[in-house]
Image 1 (cartoon, rainbow, N blue to C red):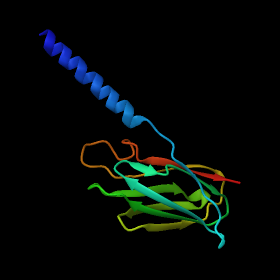
Image 2: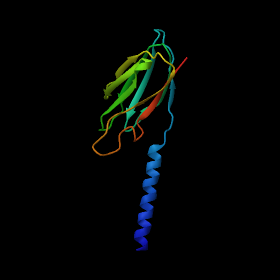
Image 3: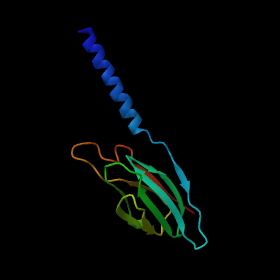
Image 4: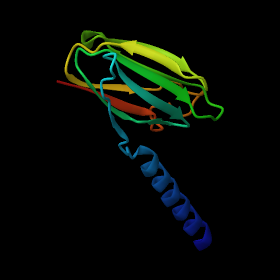
Length: 138
């Protein structure tokens, strides 16, 4: 009986630790620069439940090109950001070949992006850590 209780307690602690680790947001920041042609280009990777970078800083009223590609794995992913009031509105599936998403942010602020995919009754990709922030600055 004691062994069973000890195993149950150990299992609960392991699950709690794993859940805490999944919920942790480790910032991988990228500050875009303006290329000679006046476009801010950002290369992003999305993999098994992460975006890299997951914090992207761009300038307002300057065109942006996000080049997003999958790093592998079997789960399909997308990147979604809906902020039409700021000139940003997309939901794009991507794979191993880079996909280019173009927009011009028109309003300073912080806008969340994520992967909207979910498999059956499991946690969504967003809940598993696949989300980030687009920061639009002056």
